[in-house]
Amino acid sequence: MCLYIFLASVLSAQDVRTSKSGLNFREVALNSACNSFNNQAFMAILDILNYPDPRLYTVAEPVQEVDATIHRLIDDMAETMYAAPGIGLAATQVNVHRQVIVIDTSEDKQNLQVFINPRLLTQCGSQDYEEGCLSVPGVYETVTRAEKITVEALGRDGKPFTLKAEGLLAVCIQHEMDHLLGKVFVDYLSQLKQVRIKNKMKKRQRNHA
Ligand code: QAP
Ligand code: CO
Image (cartoon, rainbow, N blue to C red):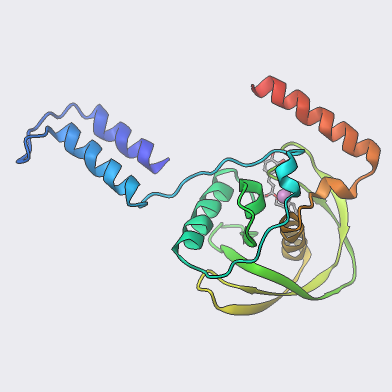
């Protein structure tokens, strides 16, 4: 997105000043944009798998080391989630089968929460919440989950933390942890609803083709 805006503004400026290297201004701008791209200075919006893609049923592997590759994945997942816009995204949904989740349930979208290798330590009570999913666009159905949870995970910095959550955040963490186990919220619904949702998705795919 930033790259496109940047390139569009550079290319629309009809500036053909010649630089020391002999390249004109437009070529220099393009080169530097491409170099930044190769050096991975830009984040990327990733493709999201759509239900009932069989790859959504893959069980994610634990992350062994929170390295630059994982940082890049987290940044790209965050950009993808914010662009959608969504409040949670699991790596499974972008076809990366590692235990990585990004969540931001805040109003101002300034509170990114990262969960690597999450484990539920406690869960209690129950709550019904109307859930959606970026992999099941346009479908919202009520699911019953634990009301309060305690989760242990690694943060973006690779350091372990524990977090108590309730309400929407607790629902979101449980929804995203399900993705890492190869589970989609639709799987909790009646067979009839699952069939209807699959048909709706097929129809959608035809129209968006
Ligand atoms: C999971 O879901 C969640 O259908 C995150 O057209 C949802 O961010 C947990 C979205 C609700 C708890 C409660 C869905 C965006 C976003 C759509 C999302 C859509 C556009 C879903
Ligand atoms: Co989801």
